[in-house]
Image 1 (cartoon, helix red, strand yellow):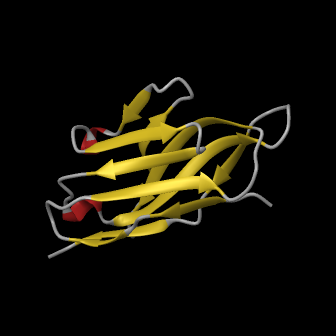
Image 2 (cartoon, helix red, strand yellow):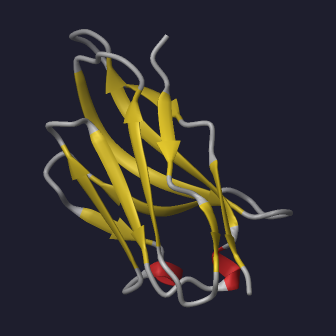
Image 3 (cartoon, one colour):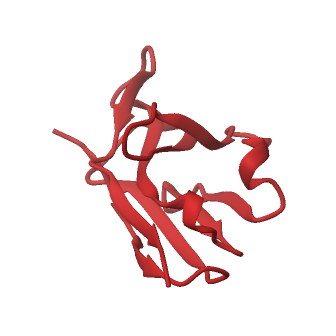
Length: 120
């Protein structure tokens, strides 16, 4: 079964940068919108950034000007460039995408999550 596979998390100092990547583990028919969510300990999962098939982006207010979401449609990959990281960005980051394995409706898929820790 196809899964979304994330990479790029880790430990970084405040003010540092990380880039997350996410792509399906196998062949797919098409991809719709792609998003990054995050969940900090004791908090609800929140939308960080979204990118549509046409490239329109949306960001949470807390990350505007610091994070950039992008996608490479040829590689079926979505990225999250995170700059000027703050301790409050510490969370598990989840990739989400609407995928089709064949002609028909899109279905929701989630990655397994990747830990981002911002600490000195």
